[in-house]
Length: 251
Image 1 (cartoon, rainbow, N blue to C red):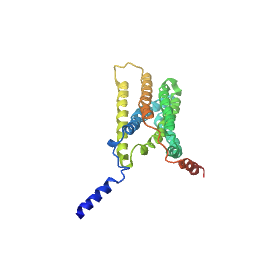
Image 2: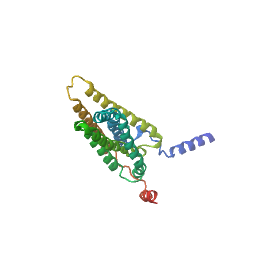
Image 3: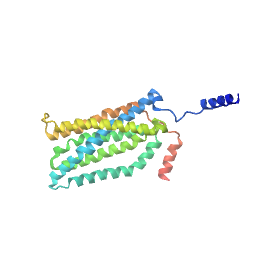
Image 4: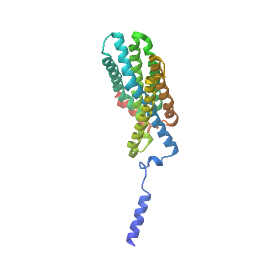
C-alpha cells in the first residue's frame, strides 16, 4: 500500500516536471524544422565561397596575376597579405558585430547586407583577368570585400543557432550545419573543377574563371535565400537588452 502510494507520487511528479530544453529535433514543430532547414541551407550556400573561391580559385589566380604583372614569383606572399588584411578587419569588427547581433532584432538585415556584399563582389572577381596588368589589384579589392562579406556574415549566421533549438541539441544542429556546408560546397567545387579540366569545353580560360565566379555567386544567392525565406528573425528577450547595448559599448 505504501509502495503503491510512493509510485503514484513519483508518477505525478514526473508528469508535472517541466520539459523546457528537452525537446528533440524530431519533436519540433513543422515551422521550427523549416526554420532550422533554412539555417542549414545557408551553410550549403556560402560554402561555395569557402571551398571554390577562398580555397581553390582565388589564391592561385591572384598569385598568377601578380607574378605576370610584376615579373616576380612572390604572388603567394601577396595573396597571404590580402587574406591577412581581410581577416584583421573581421577580427576587429567581430566583437561589436556579435554584440549587436545578440542584442538587437536586426540579425537578418545584417546578414543580408554582408551576404549581398559577398555575393556581388564574388561575381565581380570574374572580371579581374580581363584587366591585364592591373588584374591582380582588381582581384585583391574584390576578394577583400567578398571575404569580409563571407566571414562577417558567418558571425551573424552563427548567432541564430541558440534561437533555433534547445541547448541540448546544439551539437547536433552544428553537426548538421557542417554536413550541409560540406556537401553543398563539395558538389559545386566538383562542378567547377570539371569546367576547368574537361577538354570538351573549348572555352577561353578567363571565360571559364568568370563562369566559376558567377556560378559561385548564384549558388550562394539561390540557396542562401532559403534562410531569409524560412528562418524568422529571433526575438530579443527584453527591452533591457537595447539599453545594455549602449551601456556596454559607450560606458
